[in-house]
Image (cartoon, rainbow, N blue to C red; front, side):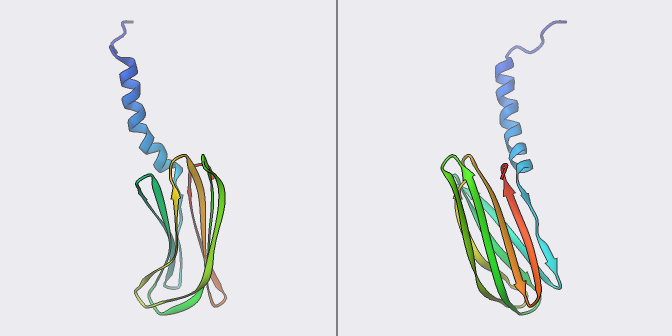
Length: 132
């Protein structure tokens, strides 16, 4: 059978460049949870070799409660754990940012967890990237 590919290395390089974004998207997982008009979310924004993680709560009525935002990071620059927590108030129809963390996104794995407690109910959402 004749070899019909004249430049196999070039083809492999092009395929690798096309598949890297697919692998990156597959490695990132996120979840949000909602309960009684409340919703938690961890939003990741990439740019300039960094990733910014925002802990968010959305609500259809005014609420007050407590939050805990935990990020476990590992990668080329070592490992670290960041904990943010405190009380919050959010107005009706508002998306409130409860905390933010910026990480190096090069060769970095992370797991972020957000717990929102209002009264006796707790919402939990998580976001992962890489193998964390």
